[in-house]
Length: 411
Image 1: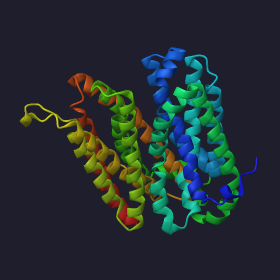
Image 2 (image 1 turned 90 degrees about the horizontal axis):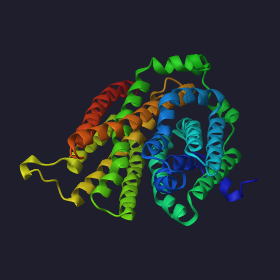
Image 3 (image 1 turned 60 degrees about the horizontal axis):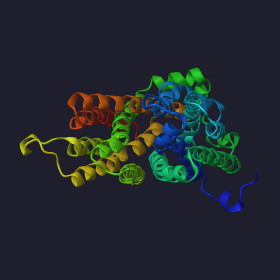
Image 4 (image 1 turned 30 degrees about the vertical axis):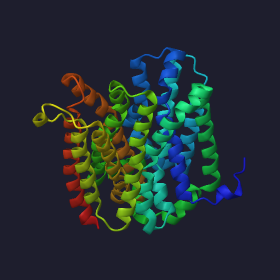
């Protein structure tokens, strides 16, 4: 199936971004479908939790391994394999008749998502001129919140009109079409390898060498742990917003719109990080800003003020703090993707470094929500959530300081 001429003229780096968004749609597609799945398949709350966390669980276990595989089998080939697996799993998922089948296919989607997303920063690095690299990596950092927000907005409409199975089939078809587009437009791995291969990378050509180079360097560890501090608190806050607003008596439509907006504004921070990095702002300063604002805004969003008789701040102000938390916090992932590329030990270890980063990001996403839920349960409400988010932000600031020391020595 040939791709139309006008679609062949797209910037290859933007095509990589669109492929990432198409994969991220599958991460976010489940939340709006849970009521329909409960009605159709009798999914329990615990089973829904497993369905939601399987993608993070796959990343937590396999991020480094998939990153190693992507560096070894080829970046374009890895993305194509990932999109194909996602597409197949989603198309089959539309035929699922029981929870067990859906769980297995969800795990397949998680594996495909890793294969599709791991190579992207390295691909972008190779497809753009150095002057555009920071900007484009910042834009890449927006792929997950953009995909999540689009799924939150589009899912309820498609499901209400055509049902959850059509929602699964349509996203599977979209990923299939994206794989064809990527296959026909993106340069081959052999062509790019001839352009970017350096003699210093030969020692990392085998996977043990790439693994050793990655895990014995401080840079990949600092970037990965920083991503865990960010992702754990962001996904916990965004993930529990529907529950928080439902308890406050808001309608389902209002809750969906408010949550989607909170995810969407994160894109602005990602894009701004790329622009600021391109303008010469030091990465660790952006990390400082992001973690400080996330910590302080979460206090405004959740804390009960003892000097005001135990009262909370007005709801409008607290929601504004949530938006600030997500928007300015968006400076962090865009900056960390750029640092993962710059602090990787070599060209052939970029996807391995990103895989290690993704593994820790998934660990944060897996651990953050249960920790916040445990604190809320113990406190009898959400008023102590800021302790968890604030602790993550403080650790993030410490890691940012270490990154500043390390990155300063490399520039």
